[in-house]
Amino acid sequence: TIDAECQLQLHNFPMDEHSCPLEFSSYGYPREEIVYQWKRSSVEVGDTRSWRLYQFSFVGLRNTTEVVKTTSGDYVV
Image 1 (cartoon, one colour):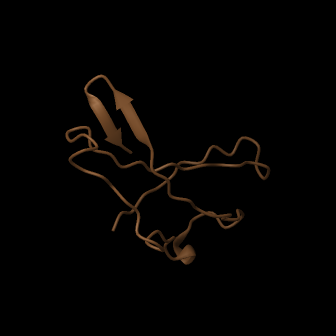
Image 2 (cartoon, rainbow, N blue to C red; image 1 turned 120 degrees about the vertical axis):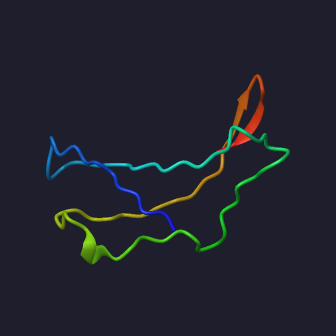
């Protein structure tokens, strides 16, 4: 379980749009040694009653996988 927060800059409220990326990676192990894979339906949003700002709409979430190529190897993010 991970609890994460996203600081909102509300300069154009109520017309703001925000994206709050949360990335996981291991630069200690290359792609050949460790791969993060999302399970189906494994990402969820907690209880919205605990949200502190009720004037916004949550429109969705997505999970992706990216390979970052560096001179020391390829890493999964």
